[in-house]
Amino acid sequence: MKINYYQLSIRQLNELLKTKAITPDQLTKLVYKRLTQFKKLNAIVTSLEQYAIKQTKLITEEEINNNLLAAIPFVTKDNIATINILTTGSSKILANFIPNYDSTVNKLLTNKQAINIAKTALDELGMGGDGLQAATGHVLNPWNLKHITGGSSSGSAALVAAGIVPFALGTDTGDSIRKPAAYCGIVGFKPTYGLISRNGVFPYAPSLDTVGIFTNHVEDIAIVLDTIALPDQQDFTSVESKEKDYTKNLDENIKAKNIAILNYNDYQWNDTVKSSFDEAIKHLTDGGAKIYQIDFDKQLLQSLLPVYMIISFAEATSCHANLTGINFGIRKNGKTYQEVMTNSRTAGFGDMVKRRYIIGAYALSESHQEELFNKAKKVRQLIVEKLNAIFKKYDAFIVMPTINPAPTIKDVLEQKKVIKSEHDYLEDLLLLANLNGGPSITIPLTTFNGLPIGFSINGAPCNDQVVLNIAWFLSKRINFTNKLLGDEHE
Ligand code: GLN
Image 1 (tube, rainbow, N blue to C red):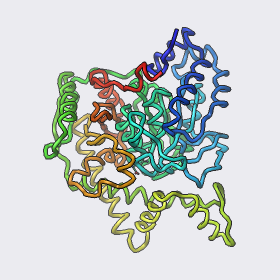
Image 2 (cartoon, helix red, strand yellow):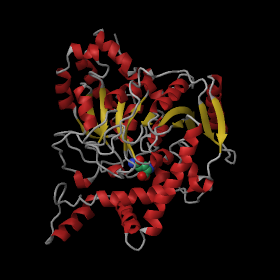
Image 3 (cartoon, helix red, strand yellow):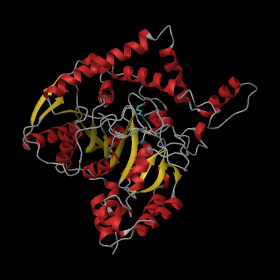
Image 4 (cartoon, rainbow, N blue to C red):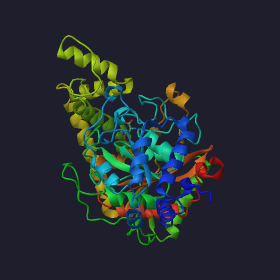
């Protein structure tokens, strides 16, 4: 029997493994075969083939019968430490870094005998939104190789979209899971800040950094979350949520849920996107939810990007001060300590990262801290308060993750869009959930010019379940097919 494993959800794969329609060994081999077919995506930093084959041999029948994740292949963004396995953050400065410790999240998945297939490319150290900033080169969008995947969790998004693995780990500081998910036509989930341990995850901006998950199916998000959403003493920002058993509590009943939708009235939608958006809202109404269009102070929305930039660049400047080539990483020669650091950092970082450190250092400097860093923190507080007020009244808040599909690589490189539009801020709304630490999910909505467009649902911190439930409800009703999972791609 020919098995198109890439069309299957975690539960379906587990069923095949349980009935021995496929062995763990065969599954791992199929994954590497498909990975080779999609090599052109340039999505990985390190293939773990030898390691994965060895791990697969350890899987027991008992494990497969008792645990949905046993033998399930996944990939890990390369800023998540994997013990004794190269972890570069897609930066030249860490090109030789083999951690002697494991991230909590990798350990939890490995304990469940899920199989780590590869470390995936990211915009260097998580800094970027296009997938063009990895030391290993551009990551290409499987829907159309001329287009970007978005970033920074670019490789993870591309591999899930191409059906190579049913789930992938990413990190989201500003939108780095949910935007590539929108551009690649998959599900991307950023849980509540602190719900998944960040122990062993390279920091970018610690007050915003969140580990999250990519899948093709909403239920798979809940399944993975059940394994990795655990309080961890090794992460001092770890939260213990009252919610647990996300899979068991998936519930299609959205009756009487109060759902707010951002008022887009002064924006001229493209007709296809608008009608799909309206259709999704109609599904929610038909399901018994109460829908409210709400306004959000436009000035605050326009400040989302500058606030995010100042806070995240400043935090990155401070927490990457240890990347000097002295304690670890690539070292360049110099006569003094200072020269070694300067030479190592000059050679080790890409332009995007350097630019961000310069802005970050400026925002933290004594003479500018008040007007930049402290002010950004105050505006962040205003945004958080506004969101608190929204979530007091509503169970969820819906925004579009992007208003346009993925641009071409060429346009991004040539910075085609220099003319600023007053609606640019509509591309930055995913930042809301990073600033207040709430859960946020992107699911696929439709395609436009042959490229996917997503739909996002946000919730109050520690209310991850309702966000998953609404996404689950909608994903069963929205008519979207990931064309890459069709038979012709075998
Ligand atoms: N696009 C954002 C940026 O450029 C997101 C980064 C992230 O979430 N890691 O920084």
